[in-house]
Image (tube, rainbow, N blue to C red; front, side, top):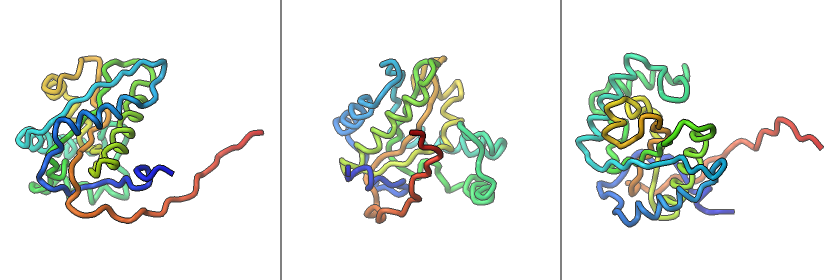
Length: 193
């Protein structure tokens, strides 16, 4: 099997070095080779490497989520984790981007059917390519709401009809990636023959 697929982990601790522009272009090239409905390629990418802006987005996201903790972009926070999330969001030292130096936001540029799904496929390609390059990534659901505010969309260059779909932090992991975790066997709901 593909080693990167089994090696990918959510990384939340990075060395200070940022991936360089050439490396980010290689990862983005891998992203755009994802499958896409009707060959629409409805994705665009916003890259943020400005620590002050990342901090500002983090602070705004925490404030928004403390007011409306269920609005994380694609669903609600699981009640089992509500206390943990409340504590994180209330901690002034917590940065939703885990102090990573690079955020890549996979955005849809239209509101066509399947555009979000296409963007998630591109995000997975990006993350697998990052692992193959020795980098770590983590999708940051806490960021979706703030990145879709009119101000952030303007700053990031996201068209009005578009949206931030998959915010991904990327960088050199501070520690070696943990061993592969066990996963449940595929749950087959039906197999019609």
